[in-house]
Length: 362
Image 1 (tube, one colour):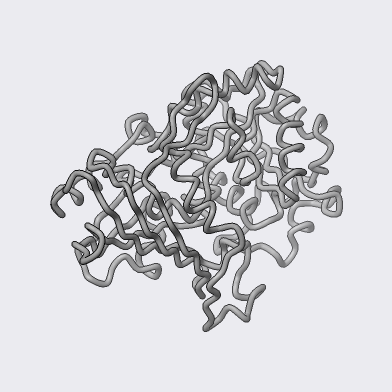
Image 2 (image 1 turned 180 degrees about the vertical axis):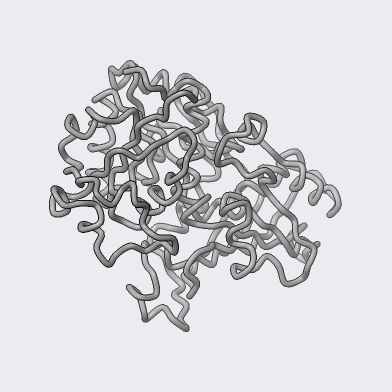
C-alpha cells in the first residue's frame, strides 16, 4: 500500500478503543489520525483525556498522546479527516445505531465492535475466516442508506470466538446440537482488577445478554445471503451458560457437540489444524498463520500460556474426546479483546480494504 489509510477511532478512550490504538501502532496499512469520544473528553489531548485509565499492558503510543480528542457527535467534523472509522462507542443501543448510520451517511465506512447493528439484516457481521461472503450485502445496505462509499460492518460477540470457528471447521460432519459454557475474562466488561477488585477470587454466574448472543450469533455467521439480507442458519441448536471468572484476558469455553455424520477424533483434529480462510490466503497483516491450534496436553489450553497465541488472533483448542451423552466434547479459548474485539475488527477492515470496499478515494 503506497499511502496508509487515515483512520478514526470512535470511543477511543474506552478499553476497546485503547486496544484499537495499541494494535494499530505499527500497522502497515492503517494510521490513527483522529480520536473521538464523549463531549466531556473533547478538546483535551488524548493522553489527558485517558489520564490514569490506560488499561493496556503496553505504553500509550507516542503518536496518539497529543491528538486532540474530538466530539464523537460532531460527525461531519470527524469524518472530514478520515478514510474510515472503527467504532467502540459506549452508548445505548439506539444511540449507537443512530451514530453509526450518521457516519455511514457521511460516506465513511464504519467497522464496528458494538452489538447494535449485529441483527440489522443488511449489515454484515463477519469473522473473516468464516463468512467473508456476507460482505456482499454492503451494496444493498448502501442502496438503503443512499450512500456511494459509506456503510457499516460489524464483528460478532467476543465469547463465540472460542467455539464458533471450531464448529465451522467441522461443518461437513453436520453438528446439530451444541452445549457451551463460557468462562469469560473481566476485560470483556471493560474492566481490570484495579477497577473491579471484588472480582478477585470470585465467580459470577451471570453476564447480562451474553447467553442469547452466544446462542444466536453463530447462526448468523453460518447464515446465507438472500435478496440483499442475511438469513440466519437454523442449526446447530446451541444452548449456553456464560460465567464471569477472575482472569484479565481470555475467554474459555467447554463445549459438547452432537454430529449427524460421525467423525473420528483424528478427523476432527485434522480439520481444526487445516482450517483456514481468505485472510490466510491473502496473507492479511493481522491474520494468524495458523488460525486454530490443537493442543495434545491434558491441561491445555491455559490462559496463562496460550491467550496470546498468534498475537491474540488465534484460537486454541484442547481436551477433545468422546462423550457419554454427546458425541464429542472439547475446550476452546480465545483472546477476547484482540480476536474477540478490536483485533477481529481490524482483520475485517483489512479484508474490506483488500476487497475494495474501503479505500482512500472519497
